[in-house]
Amino acid sequence: MDKITIEGTSKTPTIIFDSETGLLELKGRSIPENSIEFYKPVVESLDKYASDPKEKTSVNIHLEYFNTSSSKCILDLFKKLEAIHKTGKEVVINWYYEEDDEDMLEAGEDYQAIIKVPFKMIEVGD
Amino acid sequence: MLSFKGDITSELLTSMLQIMETKLENLDEQPKTRKKVCNVLVECLQNLYHHRDEMENAAANDETKKQAIFMISKNATEYNIMTGNFVKNDKMASLSTRIDKINAMNKEELKQHYQDVLSLEGFSEKGGGGLGFIDIARKSGQSLNYDFLKIDEDYSFFSLYIKIAQ
Image 1 (tube, chains in turn red, blue):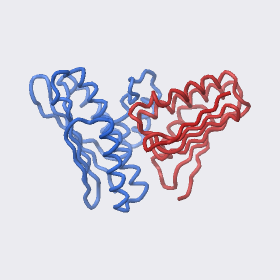
Image 2 (cartoon, helix red, strand yellow):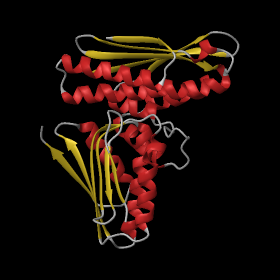
Image 3 (cartoon, rainbow over the protein chains, first blue to last red):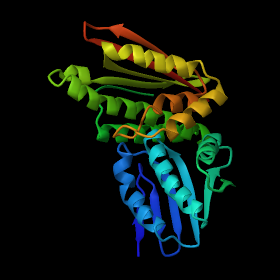
Image 4 (cartoon, one colour):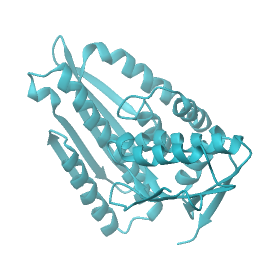
């Protein structure tokens, strides 16, 4: 069983991935110079998980902001979720954004336009 | 608010961001603007940082060509960011084309362009994959001004000017 917990820093998000409960969570900011290296363990675990996923996979993205180098890695994660969704299993991506933060809302909409998985846009008050 | 000239390392980049975050907090800037400015700053600084790697190969025996400048200031209505770095003359045309294309787009077109580039396969090792300028243009909501100053037969100095409304 796979459970990943990565503590957040000033440049990288807190990441929790629990294959037992089907929960993936990203929280904080994601601005590392080398995002591919940072996201590698999560991408790999999700890859493994995709071969035998739970009936329901819940994803919580609660990012303050992220750089363009992370945006591609986040898309990679979402593509794997899309593949799971295609097999008929339930996948939900909860995209959290702070009140009035149009940039983060738009960032969520960008992924929503590319990835065929149900998105829930959730506004959070201060 | 902050300016720098020299070699952009990862540690330096982190310190500059921390300094700017503290300054923006002390200015009591709205969280929304604070995030926007930081986000654009990260893109600008990481552009310089990744570009340095490129120059390492191109100009291995010329330390000065790896240097860059960075400046951020603020007036009553906007933040101004300026970055400068050396580029090979043969990169000038493609760089201009890319930025001109972005500048000619409206908000909706930029959004579409960003999504198109994001969903393209085959990003560079660093992962940026040409999204940096598009993202800066989207977040700042303004055109990207730039110019090239010819240094010699091989190199020019590329300056980029970004405005972010408060």
